Length: 196
Image (cartoon, rainbow, N blue to C red; front, side, top):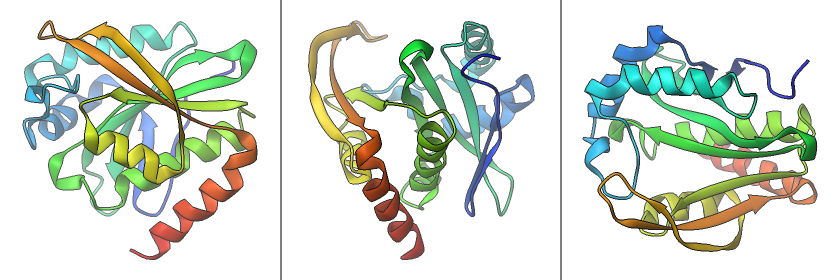
């Protein structure tokens, strides 16, 4: 049995389901909501590129180092975005939560907070991870603030780390949460969701 297995994670606001080709239309509509693919500091697939992106994700899943999820609202079953476990190192029980994006209309609704709670709970309490990492573009202030609100600690900045689709260089900010920090992080995420 490999470290990562497709799994459905269910909360009150969202469910995270394994990505499939059946999700093309829903993900294309979510990407179009806010024209997310046009933002300089993200790599959200354009609606017309969604099928090819799903092919890429499913191919990467076969390596055992990548597990993509579709994010759905529980009240409507509408697809609002996606997230993944990526850059997984099974021998070290290390995962990164990344490739996360949500339709503009779903942002600041608690759905992303609950998605992270579900992924972190599975990582620490089922996969027994020794570290969960987050990475984002230095220019993506919204993402950096969201990661910091989760309780992740900044590990550092990888300068000129990646070439973006438009040819610009990305400085990548690296954050992580460790097992001894998880109880406090979990408690705070639950508190935020209860306060909504």
